[in-house]
Image 1 (cartoon, rainbow, N blue to C red):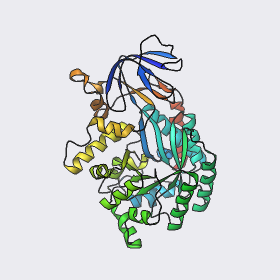
Image 2 (cartoon, rainbow, N blue to C red):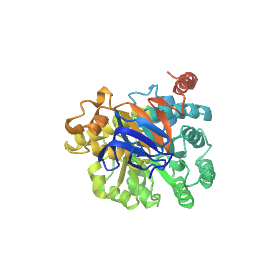
Image 3 (spheres, rainbow, N blue to C red):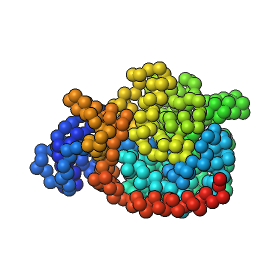
Image 4 (cartoon, rainbow, N blue to C red):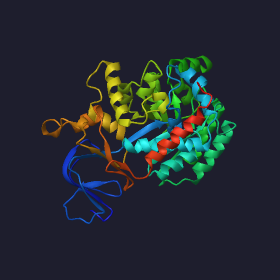
Length: 419
């Protein structure tokens, strides 16, 4: 049933969560549902939907949003551990809340422009990022980093966990911005730190977020130290909780994938980051699907992926690399990879069907999702929690020009002295 909080799009094309196409007049309801329109309902806005494609918005399940500050790629050509220790950690030591605000604000603007309404983030000063996303009208699972090194925001892991305990205690289940405990990795967190983080997650019914099995060096070092590979080790110390977000999860054995399934983990495929830093392998999706693991897509940070926060581009690469790695051109057709990139979304992105990249539409108009994934398109409108964060190609909740200018100015001081 429509109410005066609904939005009507006339003569539009809408794809639902199951990938089924609907053509005609539709209502987008404030609660995130949709229905066909009779044309006579009381609505908040009545929009000409001809030339518009409506889909669920995209969700980005592994980000470091404020790393927009690192998008000036002074670290190009570094393998992961040189990239971390010689480029990222030294510059991040200069971070402060204002730098994080500026980087996260630019990230929010890019998310909105490219049709993403949600990010599962992992970065310093999480309350700052949370406020930026809240003010931008977006959703987030904002993870506060926890590690025994490289913490510009805290002297040690214990103080990071104490801050997160306070944040988690005060959040409400209905908040658009939720917080998580972002233990960096098995190589930057001691067993004691990992156990304490897991205990806090259980106490506050919160999610954990961790980089896991990203490179061969990581798994080899973990095995040399513990006799176990990273997922086995985390399983052995009772780290996992339902909903734990495991970024990358590339260098894993089938028994480890079964462990992730047993613990109801969300694994995140980050192909552009894996390829840019030459990790030598990406997530093996068929094995994850066979085990029943919940798999999502993430861009990683701007500095590690080189591709920014464009989830259409990341979804395209996710499909292509799976086909390439498995010698199987049937893997991840457009409808499947779009479903993977938007799974769980209750919000709407509205794309420009007049964008040249969306042509030809195909016989019977059957190429909408294929064009969107493999060619891309302009995001005209986006509705989050029933509110417009972008309309007619103009972002409503972030001043884009101001965001870009602040970012440019911040980078000049942030990189002062860096070659």
